[in-house]
Amino acid sequence: MQDKHIGFIGAGNMAKALIQGMVQSGQFAPAHIRFNDKLQSEHHPLEIAGQSIVSMDKEGLVTWSDVLVLAVKPQDLFNLLREVDPLATERKLFISIAAGIDIAGLTKSLSVAHPVVRAMPNTSARVLASATALTGNAAVTPGDMALAERIFQCVGAVVQVEESQMPGVTGLSGSGPAYVYAFLRAMIEGGVSLGLSHDTASQLAIQTLRGAVEMAAASEDDLDTLIRQICSPNGTTLAGMKVLETRHFQEHVMEAIQASAQRSEELRRELQADIRE
Ligand SMILES: NC(=O)c1ccc[n+]([C@@H]2O[C@H](COP(=O)([O-])OP(=O)(O)OC[C@H]3O[C@@H](n4cnc5c(N)ncnc54)[C@H](OP(=O)(O)O)[C@@H]3O)[C@@H](O)[C@H]2O)c1
Image (tube, rainbow, N blue to C red; front, side):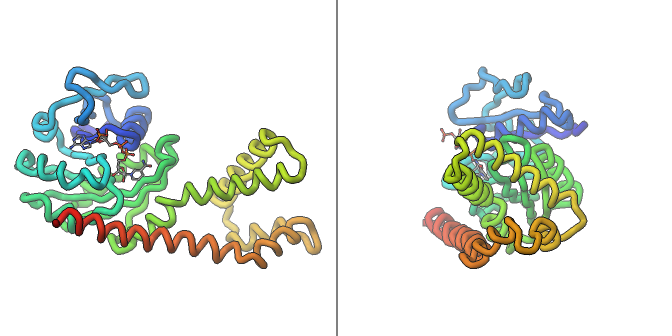
């Protein structure tokens, strides 16, 4: 079990999902996790996964923590860093999950050369099935990165990327759950259009998606082979696949991911320009 002290600043949706995963995994003792949130008074612990997580004032939390997870909205992050910077006089591992704030912006806001990891989890963290990408500044040691990985592995799978790849991560795994929901909705509506009840169509569509994803993850065959295995000549699936190809399904999905990545870069520039003003 990890013996480091992990302090969360901001205890909203994402922090709660992370804390839940950390506690349920058994890798982090609840006593080694604390938090600070604007709305939460010092005397109200968070009840998560049957455990009480203690709240502290900011100064106490920063001093107590070896790792500070910054889990506030991007527009609140630089104000928070202004509060925290004078308190963090000793080396701490900073982990930011704020979308669109880059490592350079984070590092510049800290007077001490703290190690800083930027994480991009996704909403599936709430069911402990996030896909999270991590990147770090030059002060991050392999031990720091391993610890950050252990934290995010509690809510799903983790990859390490270069910071320049973060827009791609945002487009693919950050926004990706919405595209999957849209696909799922289209499958359900397809079933309903053919006379299935909404409930039956939902059950079949969700299980079909789950099964296909598990198959893709478990199989040694590539995706083209898996598709071919279902498409018998002149058969039913081939008839459907022809429609997807004629309507440029793949290109549309790729364009959606690219548009999201591009927007994330625009937002990063807008956010950081606002903050400098
Ligand atoms: N939700 C997701 O699926 C997701 C996915 C990827 C990344 N993220 C990132 O995760 C971060 C958190 O998102 P979230 O959905 O968890 O947000 P959230 O639910 O709004 O939680 C943020 C919490 O931080 C508090 N806060 C703001 N400034 C503070 C300060 N100076 N000191 C202490 N607490 C402060 C907020 O209080 P007030 O509400 O009173 O301001 C709120 O309770 C965001 O930066 C987002 O980009 C989220």
